[in-house]
Structure formats: C-alpha cells, structure tokens
Length: 183
Length: 238
Image (cartoon, rainbow over all chains, first blue to last red; front, top):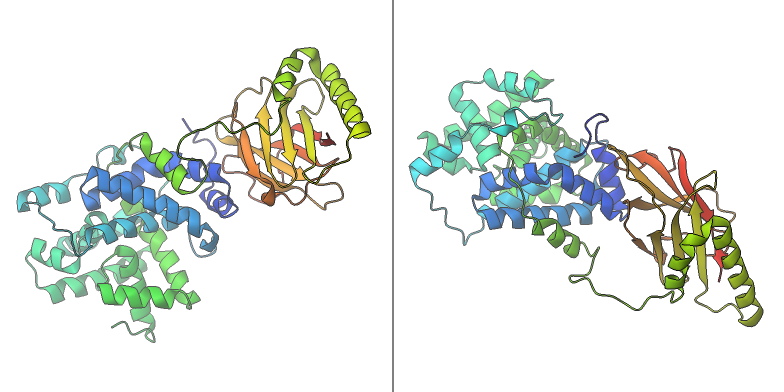
C-alpha cells in the first residue's frame, strides 16, 4: 500500500512520464486507476468499455505528458479530464444506443458516493460541496448529471423534465456561481 | 457558436468543455482554439481543478489485473509476451557464481578479465562496459550495470537490496566522465531488472558514473538527485 505520509507528487510523475519513465506512469496507475475506472464506469456503464476508456486514457496521458503544464493546473485534474473526455467520447459515439430504462437511469444518477465518502484522497471537496449547496437543487442536479453521469444538455433536460434552453442557461450560470463562490 | 472575444463566454465555454456539455461542433471549435490560445488553456486548467473534487462522488471500481498489462504493452514498455532474447553478455551466468566471492574478489576478477581482454582484442564499435554498484561504504554490492554501445543498458539486482521505503522511490542516474551533472534513467523497483535504450543515455563510455539515490515517490522533483546515494559505481570497459 502506498504511504500517505508524504503527499504523492502527481506533477513530478507526469513530468517523468514526459521523459519516458514508465514507472512514473505505473505509480499514477497504482494511485488512481480504481478511481478513474469508477468515474469511467459511471459514464459508460459497461465494465469492459470502462476499462477500454481507462486504457486509452493512460496511453493518451503517456503520449501527451509533454504537453502538461504545471503552471496551468494540477496533474490530477489533467489526468481526470483526459479519462472523462475519453468516456464521453465513447458514449457519444453515433453508433451507441443508450438503452437504460428510466428507473435504472434514476438509480445510477441517485447513487450516493459509497466508499468515496470515507476514503481520503487528498481532494479538497469541502469548498466545492459548500458552493454546490448554495445552488438551487435543480441547478445543482444539472452540474452533477453533467460531470458525474456525463449527460448531455438534452439528456439532462429530459431527466429533469425542463426545457433545453433553461438547462443550458442553468449550467452556465451555475458554473459562474461556483467560480465566484470558490474564488 | 462560441464567442471567443467575450471574456465571460470564454470562461463559460472552458467550464463546459471540462464539464463535457459542449455540443460536438462547439467542442471541436474549442479544441482547435486551445492549441493557439494560452489564456483558454489556463481557464481549462482552472476549471479542471475546480471540478476535480466531483470525482469523489463516484465509487471506485477495481480494475482487472490485465488492465495495467494492456496499458504497458500499448505504451511500448514491454513486449506482449515475455520472451527470452539471447543474452548480450554470455559471461553473465558466471558473474552470478562470482557473487559468493565477495566484493573484493569480484572486483579483482573483473579487473583481470578486463586486462586480458584489452591485451588481445581491440575495442570494437559496440564496446561493452560493466559497472558494479556498491553502497557508499563499499560494504554491499547491490546492482550491476551492463552496457553496450548501440544496444541497451541493463541494471540487474545482484545483492539483497531490501525494499523501497513506503512513499519513496529509488532513482537511477548516470553521469558520463566530464559531464556537468547526472541524467535520470528512471525509477527502479526492488528485485527487478531495468532496461534502458542507450539512446536515452547522454553518452556511453568508460569511467561513466552510475548511481541510485533515494527520492520522493514520483522521483526527484528537480531533475537532479536530491536524496542520499544508496549505490554507486563506474564503468570499466570489457
């Protein structure tokens, strides 16, 4: 088990990947793969496809590690964006049919954070959660469906039985409110 | 259509890009703009970090053991099926037997071998080198570096090197004779042979220094050794 005494240096690990040091990629994988797989699985809802997404994400991270700029943000934020965008790409592929029944969809969407709550991953979730709490419930739901479930504007509108235009403006305004609240 | 001239719109689009709600057309336009727009990249970086804690809302899922192997294969780090290739150093098995001789005996044997070879064979193009890495007090031998010009470098554990302390890493370095500073050759695992293509070495030659230092878990943050030297040695030509 990795020790949590000293914080893991994600930025150095990504920069080591850029130098071709594969153990750096492995240490990132050992740290984050189960969380990344959880994120991908929630979006694509298929175990094999979720593993494909994580695979493609790590290969992409390895190939593009040289483009990571620590001045712009954390390496972990960078890595999660790569994997989330891979997952979104997989589900929005024109050939894919989302065939979940509404109640199944609701079960997925309302699933609470199981182990995620108790395990400390060194993420400062408190501030963001406080700011989310300040949003009205339907607006907060828009942001969470988009980020956690990977829903499109249209899927969120359908799920919340709210006009598409309203959903679009709620998301924009919610993001602006979160930014201001976190500043 | 994203109005890239409008600051508020730029930031909103960056947020939605990270969130994943841009439509296909807007996303394509945004990605195209990212490559040439440093301000947009900075906004994306900020949004990534703002929203990152939301990844804690998902339960983790244990990957299958095959997943890392697949990734390793894809990044070209290992060949799909482990296969033995002819050892570039046929005397290696004999060296293993020498381990019992102790450090002094080993060094003497190597020196003798080197002298004999040098008398009879002119140095070939693919010159071969060997470095025995010992603890700084020379009490323990931990690793042997096998090196051949134009081929690859192998770092082979030969002694009981123990295990890497939790939260730390062993990092492997080289410094050719006369070089200003060492170059990282990557992190090493206890008990594992590390292979490095010689193209990644700044040079290959005799009296080239190799060392392993104790570093933070992800390797030295500075690109130079920051921790104590655990094993060190320099090459002799064979």
